[in-house]
Length: 154
Image (cartoon, rainbow, N blue to C red; front, side, top):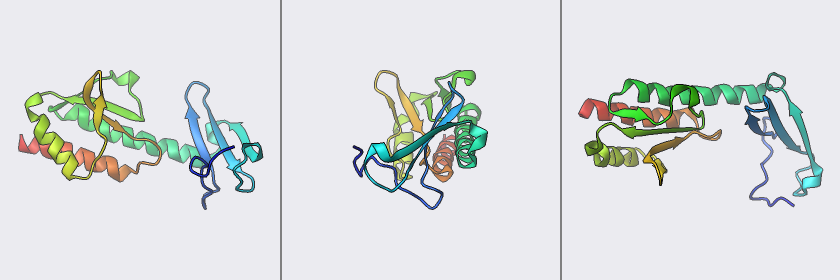
């Protein structure tokens, strides 16, 4: 049984819940046939990405968010990314400050901008910007603006 808290809600877009698997080059999507909580009443299918336009649109939006944050990390001399370009995640951008003296200033700036949860992994440190499906592009733009503002202040 799925609880109402974990069950994806039906939306005007068709009520689809999606996960993209790069390894299989497929999308998995589920639609609740009657809105019940019983998992047995879930219809599920494997489809190629080009067969479901809503999922392709989501993929394009996620790639835009990743390009935006990584371009700021690459161009702004105050930041450096942890991952090499070919291994970068489109869901989690990890980076650090080139000058740790700016940490307190940067932390204050992103918190004042209303950003939460930017702390990096406990063993690596730095910062991790999680850009999962529900995060709008505008939220990534706010972080990029804060990073750019830090560059102009430094």
